[in-house]
Amino acid sequence: MKPNLIIGLLAGSIALVSADQCFAQSFTDAPSHGRLLAQKKRTLKVRIEHDVVQADDLMLKGKYGDAESMYKQALQRNGKSVPATVGYGMALAKQFKLDGAKAQFEKALEMDPRNAMAHAGLAMVMYNSLQSSSQTVRANQDAILKSAEAECKQGLAIDPGMPEAHYTLGNVYRTQGRIDEALNEYKEASKLDPEYSEAFAGVGLVNMNKGQWADAVTAFKQAIQLSSGNSTAHYGLGRTYFKQGLYDEALKELNTSLYQHRESAPVRLTRGEVYSAQGNAVAAIREFQEAIRIKPETPEAYINIADIRENRGDLEDAIAQLRSGTELMPDNSVLRGRIADLSLKLEKLDQAIKEYQKVLEVDPGNGPAAQGLTRAYYMKANKDANSSFFVSNEFEEAKASIDKAVSMNPNNMELRLAQLKLRIMMGDPVDLSQVAQPTNDGERIAYAEALLAQNKFAEADQQLNTVLNNSNDPKEVFAVGDLSLMIKDLKSAEAAYKKANGMPGQEKRAARGLNLVGKAKEAAQQDLTLANDLAKKKQLGSAMDKYHAAIYENPRVADARLGAGKTLELLKPAQSKDLKEAIVQYKAYLALSPELPPKEKEKMEKKIEKLQEKAFKLEQKEKERGGK
Image 1 (cartoon, rainbow, N blue to C red):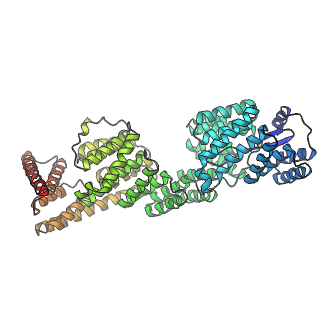
Image 2 (image 1 turned 180 degrees about the horizontal axis):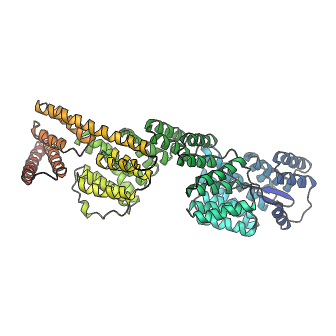
Image 3 (image 1 turned 180 degrees about the vertical axis):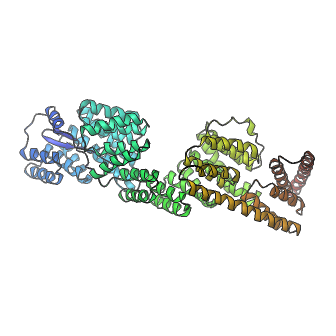
């Protein structure tokens, strides 16, 4: 793909501004000669130097190295020539010799502070410098963008009719996330020059980012009609087609864009996404790796490779891929969050907690990280089965992180449910019926997790069944299955994988999920059998370890709950914490045994009442002893 010339003539000089940014990458195309002549009419009337005119022609032909030499010759004859200085800067910029270009623009502005194209060129250099992999540049992106914005505005204050300056300003705004302002600048550039292909491509990029696919297609096609060599437009049209599920059409446009500019990370990235969507994992990984080679700071490429590894069941490889990304982008919350999620699936709970905390340090209001942290602590508490965990510094830090996230997102129901789940884990009385009913699938999942923390299995099933019924895309169904498997809700996991198994091309992935569910059930049953044997032999401590293991692996095994409750009652010396846990286990047993005969149910309820009284009395005695 051939980068764009944005050429403005000022006092006989050709000013080159390369612009459009796609994921911090510039792609632009040469304007028509007619537009250059039209622009020339509005320039200052001064003597046009012969060498500069020749250099201008070379620029139009794309012979930037030759133009650089010609401008240099002109400057050797007249070192104070502003047109030659600006043109020399543009020739260097076109070859991405940004430091040299910057020096020339600054020199031109020393000679003529009101040279509008020198200001625009300096803004372009600043903007294009963001393509650098330099940590210093990346760390100062906001400051660089503000400086580029200031230079653009200064140039436009001198000459508001520069379409290139409006275009560069649009790119700056778009990178800053000021989408509507960017759109206005692109439209102004196209209004000033109706044949300005890049301006229409900019409009297309904004529409694409907004998800307005039809408008994006129209703008990109208009840009291509004006200039078939507009690689940005081909890229944008290809990505838009991909988002619409038109994979063959997408590849055609992306291939055209790649032919015009071989070193394009965004094009490689999108090609990889298309291949991945088509099920061609080998080709997809090749494209993602190319994107990383060209632009190592492309987090989407690492994430996409990790997704492919995860779908194959290679979670460790997926984490390794993501970690290679964090070596370059240590504060990238998306990469860190994905590492945490995968660590959670591998039950590397301490590692997951560490990564979620790093995300919250960088982004305290990150909802998914706060929820993930709560989930990790919930799993850790269930696995450790150690009540002292809840009064540890670690748990208090987690609580503080969640509270801070909630304070920053007070209307986020998912975060509030995560906060309530922590309270449930601490043994605080929480009435979830007083919480507003969830209105979307994210809230339903968070609500279901809070219900499971209270062993309200039937109510949790209702929420998760609704989510599963709403999920018709394989990725969504597997997400429900994987989450359910991770939190050990094997019933919901099995239902999700069975649904996925009926979807075309998903049989292997579904079979792997069902196999994991089967293994978890088998492990829970083996631990339950061993726990029962140990309990019969009065090896109560060891029996409890195995009951806890069985409950962790499959919380819905009623017999494990019953065995655990009975064993906890027999532990000596009697302690209130053991009796309180026995109550929890008996209540879970009742919830998991809806077919229990009325007499048995009544008997268990009376046992629970007696245990509550006994636990209360023991707790009072323990407090008295502690006080003494």
